[in-house]
Length: 124
Image (cartoon, rainbow, N blue to C red):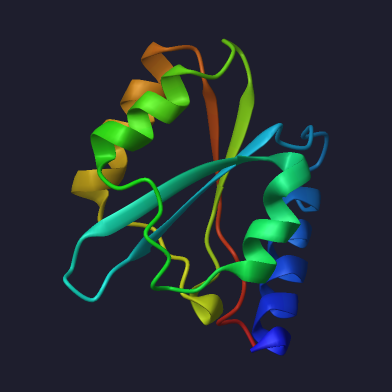
């Protein structure tokens, strides 16, 4: 399990560094699916990212619904850069487009720079 967390950490770290000239995100948003089919979300500071990823378990309840994810984004300062990462090898994944798109539009409307940074867990 620690190996999976390490792979996720390296994947997400490299995802940010692969965008030439791109600043490192101030915050990170992660999403995952629960057994009941509901998606969960969390927004963490860059300084909390490694601790979150290291301790993440797919059963982690997160902050719940899309409305709660939007509330977390709205509380951030305007103009902030938020990386939305995934690492399917550790259970972090993007929701379907019909859930993702409203979050992307909400972020844009509130002047939050949401940068989708797909992981590379499945590329071996």
